[in-house]
Image (cartoon, rainbow, N blue to C red):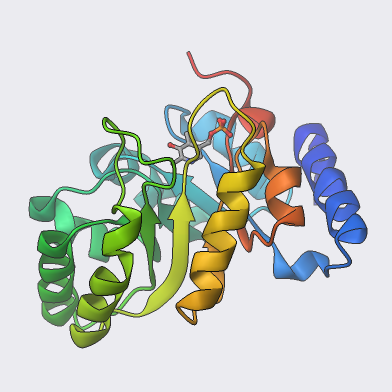
Length: 219
Ligand SMILES: *Cc1c(COP(=O)(O)O)cnc(C)c1O
């Protein structure tokens, strides 16, 4: 395997945070968020052994990942961006996990798409953890109902996901998501990005979504 400096640095930081939190490194999955980056930026990470990647747009992912999946075995692709119900079929065909299940109509759309494809992929319910008006995600009060609906539709539930409000301390929001996951009997906590993944790990993150720290600033 070829060394990749940015990846090694992030992995070292993950290990450090896990040690402080008395967690095992294999409890935390690093999702390399490759949105806006082309194959030539992604290939070095694949060559270094990274296999879990995330994208935020179905169409963009369709343009670059099928070819990379032919070249590399074991790629796991996560959708971390808002999903329109009319793209559910495409999303279920390409992705291995979805982090943006946030409304009843999408539960229906995804259940139908999974039935049609004969393939059920794990989903995280995205929570609007800071109750921000303009932000995606299910309102905190509506989460139990949405989870129940998803269970009824036979959608495999991986856990909860959040993007805390920008520019303020994220720790209280991570702690709240952790508590909500526990209260609802869910294992997965998709939280933490380039600026705060160590904090997220200390507060129970199982999936961290890191773009800039691996690929540099987006253009
Ligand atoms: C872009 C994005 C990330 C990665 O953000 P960075 O700050 O570049 O690490 C994580 N999660 C979601 C939902 C994103 O859209």
